[in-house]
Amino acid sequence: MQSLTPERRKELELKANDVRQGIIRSLLSAGSGHSAGSLDMADIFTALYGAVLRHDPARPDWPDRDRLLLSCGHIAPVRYAAMANFGYFPVEELLTLRKFGSRLQGHPERVKLPALESTSGPLGEGLAQGVGMALAAKLDQKDYRVYVITSDAEHQCGLHWEAMMTAGKFKLDNLTCIIDRNFIQIDGSTEDVMPLEPLAEKYRSFNWEVLECDGHDMASILDACERAKHTTGKPQVIVAKTIPGKGVSYMEGDYTWHGKPPNQQQADEALRELSAARERILAHV
Amino acid sequence: MSSTDVMDRAAREMHLLDYRNGAELKQLPTRNGFGEGLIEAGNRNENVLAICADLAESTRMEGFKKAHPAQYLEIGVAEQMLVAMAGGLASTGKVPWIASYAMFNPGRSWEQVRTIMALNETNVKIAGAHAGVSVGPDGATHQAIEDIAIMRVIPHMMVVVPCDSVQTKKATLALSETFGPAYLRFAREKSPIVTTEETPFEIGKAQTFRDGDDVAIVACGILVANALIAADELAREGINCRVVNNHTVKPMDAPAITAAARECGAIVTVEEHQVHAGMGSRVAEILAESHPVPIEFVGVRDQFGQSGEPTELIEHYGMGTEAIKAAARRAFKRKVAG
Ligand SMILES: Cc1ncc(C[n+]2csc(CCOP(=O)(O)OP(=O)(O)O)c2C)c(N)n1
Ligand SMILES: [Mg+2]
Image (cartoon, rainbow over all chains, first blue to last red; front, side, top):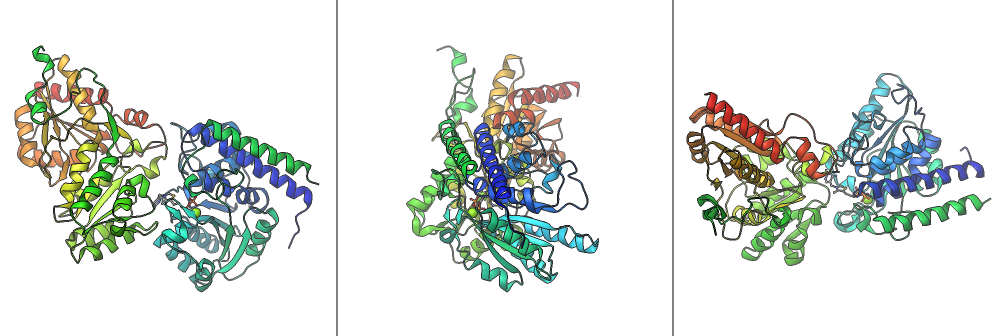
């Protein structure tokens, strides 16, 4: 496994902090949208764009790029903030989120912003499309990889299980599914609404390689992605343990932040906390 | 009180609130009426169940969950499961109401609706929340504007689109007490209340909300209020519009539609839906067979929605009062040109 140097780690953590600030600013500007899941996937999106994906912001149509699909489209703010911070479009454009005429639709629309790879929002449809893209790579003898970000509650959708079965059948080792395992959904805890555990066992029995990571630790995320890349003959799932609302103390662990934005005062507070966190990252040697 | 201060016969008969001359109308989301009606239906009949797919608050099933916890079931993000499981529950005489956003139920669950609810004739009731572009910033993926089409095409389905939150409560109760597969469509945003407790409601019976014989504006859902306001303004231009609240898309009140065409000679249909295959298309089907007259369709024209504020989107897609007025003028002109 390649090891993460302290400098590289610091760089990625600072980026993730920028992404979180972008999420807060865009949600405040929009006046609606999904805070908890967006914030908790900031580290993973940063790791992917910063150190895992083969991609080129100047060439979103590069045929050999790795594909990154966001299945749970409601956390679009994290993807938009990550894309902006990695050069896909100007950071200021984040303030157009959810507004009339914006490319940054409330839920991702590929036709408006092609680098999104697909359109999502209706849950449970991403992995199946990822299976199609991974199969296309095999048919075309291409070596690009396909990454699909899913939420935990999407595992209540039947189509997701059809996709899991299909990926197992075709031994799609170029396909990695990353689960935002934050244990929340709209009506409460996933384990109260519709229990998902033991989730890892379910993937294993569908012939997947099961990996886990701490979704807020760069080294852990990158290590899991590296292992996934080196798996042969099987699709891989990374169960990422995340804390909803991560980085903003008053949101952390609270499912009621699933689908609402901060107000001005709450956003100010969040940005203060994130700036302080940034100072701590910089001070760390 | 001068005579113009008195509302017309139709409005008085329907016990409407005075919407004329730019009156401020109280606004509430139609989904609130569903929530209230559902609790009341549960009070009246313990066989009434509510089943939700991870959207209790948004769909307003939350109140029922509190009032009748033993009659409430939560199944997570599984809309096909909603329909199929409700079909099973209904087999012993239960009356399951199943709720999600209209985009996902009946959007995702269409074939289950057709086979399990309609072909199998089960007493399952779908509550389709957040219908229309007025969902707003969530964008096209969440704006159901094809749902009336896919429901009305299925044999035996009842399809009801009430005009305000007061009427949505009545429709919820009426559907709970009428056997058969049904789809109730309502919206997220608050919208003007024009009806009162005294306003009658009967499934399948269109309501004349305003008298007039130059053009008939046939509307459903939250745009009925826009239709009334447009008619009020058109009266000052000398065009007297009848306004029909056509809340039941299926089975549609064909005699009322034909009478409106015969007596007014021109029709405008208004719905927050694709003009193709929606409520207005059904009106056209009826009139093509019974009494053809010029028809203008107000609705979304073969486009997807997008993010924006609700009123901004209603205007953008040509469903505001000005668009309705323009359509009525066109219909009137075509009629006069004969
Ligand atoms: C098919 C479908 N049904 C319902 C919804 C409405 N909805 C949006 S997010 C969500 C579940 C939220 O839980 P999760 O996916 O785990 O996301 P998190 O709250 O963790 O961000 C639901 C039911 C949807 N988008 N798609
Ligand atoms: Mg979750």
